[in-house]
Length: 233
Image (cartoon, rainbow, N blue to C red; front, side):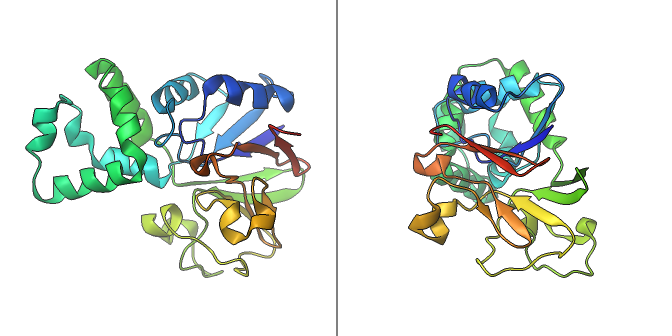
């Protein structure tokens, strides 16, 4: 079975494992995490380090992982002095990350060894911006934020990083008729209170960000049959 989830944002690892158990997720299953494992929550690095060790999980880069990578200059030595000395573009990258919840991740990183941080950065640098997968006769595109500047004639490799990491499709956006695009990034509650804490399965796309960044719980979607798994069901 193939699953997707997204935007865990430092969600407690034990609670995420309980969600996997609820879906009977096992060693023969596979899960794509559609970005934003880190920031805002208290277990960003704990969750990320666990994910890195799982042979049947694939992280697709989110804008929060991208912001962390843009601040790699911080990680030789994370101190108040090193942060206070930032200027110019480095300060812009740092301020953007921290203002989007990166302070929580930085706090965790300051407590681990530089060698571990190096491994984490190398792992994140290798994460793809999208994946394509076929499951039970359906074709899927998996990416963090959807397909900005969409055109049915455009190759996936021609999309800019911004289009895959930062865009938010409107509710009536139509993608490919014969391929389902699955993404996170935009908490479903943004489309209306009736979608709060639940995935949106639209005609050509599915949004699986059920709002961990808003204090809600993440979900799992099984691509084989589009069955949804929630913490509170």
